[in-house]
Each structure stands twice: as C-alpha cells, then as structure tokens.
Amino acid sequence: MAISVQAQKSHSGTVSVNGKMMGFKTVNIENRKNGAPILVFESGLGGGTFDPVLPFLPPDIASFQYERNGIGQSEPDSTIISDSRLVERLHSLLSALAIKPPYLLVGHSIGGPYIRLFASKYPEEVCGLVFSDPTDFMLSDEEDENAKRNSGSGTGYRQLSSIIMKTMSNNTEFADGTRADAARALSALSKGYFSEYRDLPRLDRNIGATVIISYNKHIERPDEEMNEKLKLGINFKPWWKEYDDLRILHYADLIKDSDGSKMLLLPKYSHGIYYQDPERVAKLISERYNACLKK
Image (cartoon, rainbow, N blue to C red; front, side, top):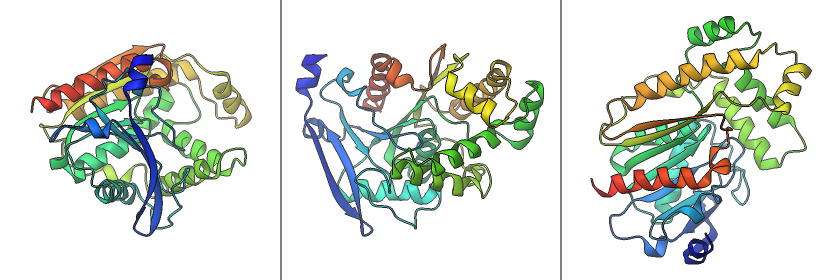
C-alpha cells in the first residue's frame, strides 16, 4: 500500500463556477491517457471522502473528488435547490477544470441517485457507474407502505429519510456544510420522494454499472437510540429485510439492459462499505474502469 500511496500525485484547489468557489481534489490526473476514463466520486449525505479507496487503485487511474456547494471549501449557493441543479453544477465544475469525459461515476449512499441522474442528463459523457450501497430512489409509496406493514413497523423508509435529513440539518454538532447539504436534500424530498427521477429514461445500454449492496446489517446502537428517542416503532431486522429485498430488485431492474453490468451482495457489511473494505471496492472500481477502456 505504501508504494501505491507514493505513486499517487494529488492536487487540491478551488475554482469559480457560476460565481461560487468550489473545492476539489484530483489524483493522478497527470497520468491520464488521452481518451481514458476518469473516476468522478459523489459522496453521501453531508459530504465525505473516498480517500480510503485511492491507495488500492492502480497509479494510472485518474480520479476527481469535489465538495458540493456549502461543504468544505465550496461556497453555499441558494440556487442549488434540486438534484438536477446539483448534477448540472458538477458538470459545470468538470467543464471549468477542463476535465473531459469519459466519466466513470462512483456514488455512495445518496450519491447513488445523483450519479444515476447525471448519467441520464449526459449519457454520451458517461462510460460507467459504480453504486456503493446506494439509496433506493426507486421505492414507490405503495412498496413503502407494504414494507412498513409487513415488518410490523411504525415508520417507513421514505419517512425515515426525511427524519434523518431534518435531524442532520438541525444538529448544531455537525459542520455547517453537513447541515446545509442535509437541508438541501430535505427540500428536494419535500416536493416528493425523488420526484425528479420518476420519468427517467432507461439506463443507456452502453453504460455498464456495478452495484454493491450491504444487507442483513448489524443494527448499530445509534440506530436503536434514534428509534427509541423518536418513538419510530421500527423492528429493524424484518424492516431492513423488506427494504433490502426491494432495493436489490430495483437496482437489478435498473442495470438489466446495460452491457456487462453486475451486482454484488455483501451480507453483514456496514453502510460505509468503502471504509470497511476499501481494497474490495477499489478492485470493483478497477474492473469497471477496465471495462470502460474496452469500449
């Protein structure tokens, strides 16, 4: 791992996009060959870094990470009120830095829906997708109600998503950027659960995807405490089984027409898969990268 780390060349900085400064980091971009993909990472709610994965990637793979508006060195922007605006801002940021496609997008948690939306807006610029324990943006209201009822729970996934976002946005112990990111996501959900995604066209068959899903998770103490404090009435084991089964079905349907796609199910893994097993995630990303090269 030390050899890989030494081989990496990273650059961090800021650039103005639509009048707002945005923070970013590139790795190995000097080694990027003409026409080769570049990894574009999209973090989960509140931001985050994919740095744990980077040491396990080959040194010839270039990558790009950024901070959404309001997080870290990226200035807040009140015009970024929807997921579509968020995705369009990422595209503008890549253009401002002259980082040309093809893009291999890697999204964690709620970053999963974001990269799916990016691929629908700019399909000709995306060669592949890697979903790391992604949020189920395809969950319908009827499915949500059935899963809540079947698990004998008092709160469904869609409602819990809003509760978590509201809690994060109001928690003064979190960084301002984390709170702002949660507030923006909550505002988007208030218009309907991932309403911008309802009529997306099928995933382009030329965009291969890898979906990594953790299931049968260990129930963490903070989840239990939240359940008790807010009186959510969630029976976690059957609750997660219902929603994980739906999420697996939804993502299997999402990728069924795209060439060379795959899904990996990881029992007993945590939501933060790329922290728990960065080497495995890096291998899957590298496989998707190599598939992009063959196109």
